[in-house]
Amino acid sequence: MTILFKAERNLIRIVQNHSIGKAVCESTNLDLGKIFEHCSLEIPDEAQPGVGWLVTWSPNELDIDPAHLHIVQVLLKLAWLYSEKSDSPLKTVVSQELTMFQAGMKLEASRRQRIEAAKKERPWPAVDQWISKKLKSKTKWTSKMLWDALPTSHDGDSIYLDGEKLHCSLGSYNSIGYRAFCEHVRRQREKNKCR
Image (cartoon, rainbow, N blue to C red; front, side, top):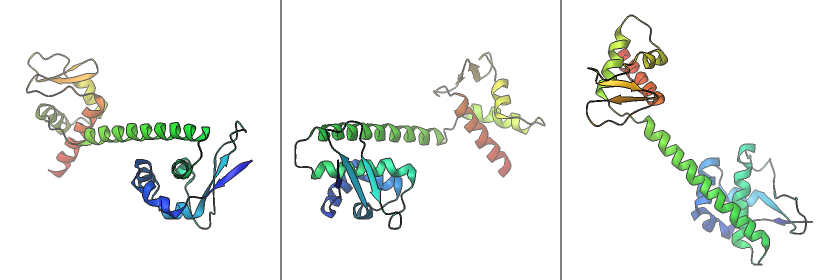
């Protein structure tokens, strides 16, 4: 036997201010009011192991992308947790699941920040000049070819490749890997086209 949970509208403000509520709104572009109005959560009986939580909704009223279904379920579980008055073992399970979901959200946000930071232009004149010089030659250079052509020792060269990292003996630049080098190549190609 399952219980059908329908979130009440008075929970919208509470869920809206919660980090999970904010994440659901951002990632699905769905309105919390519409989710609460058109979605229900089937809660399994504690005595029935293996029976899962199900989200039900009217597809005519609300279009939920199948990829977002788990996120909507987590949101409804959050609303259920706030509305549940009895002390049930399910509350503990849901609390743990929500904690893990929040940890995953933090990891994903951190990953996105690192990717965005890597995309930002980090000027490294010695590398950019070396790349630009090579690109201006008659040879058609791919990023891989340029990477392979980097000097491997710093005898007289300001940049040099050591294993999987590119280093610079001028200034205080951090070493970069192949992906960051490819980003420098891309920017130099764009700059050379503009000239």
